[in-house]
Image (tube, rainbow, N blue to C red; front, side, top):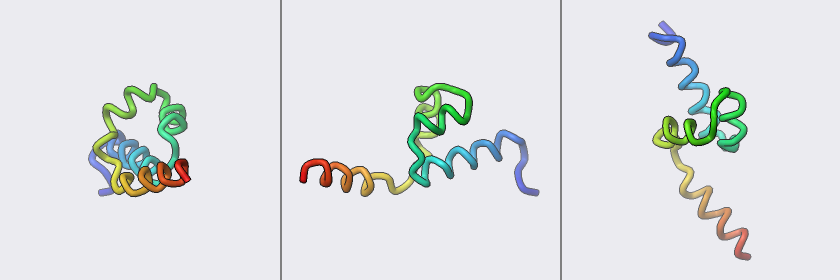
Length: 62
């Protein structure tokens, strides 16, 4: 079985988009809800973004 509920597929999709680096505003738009809802539900799903964020900060300060 691929998923127990259709929501599980949606959750996997949105989590994958966020982990792939798609901006949260774009993911929220595609999902049909606001960024505040997206971040409240999916913030814990994003993995490994600390290094990306630190790299971007370093580049901005260079």
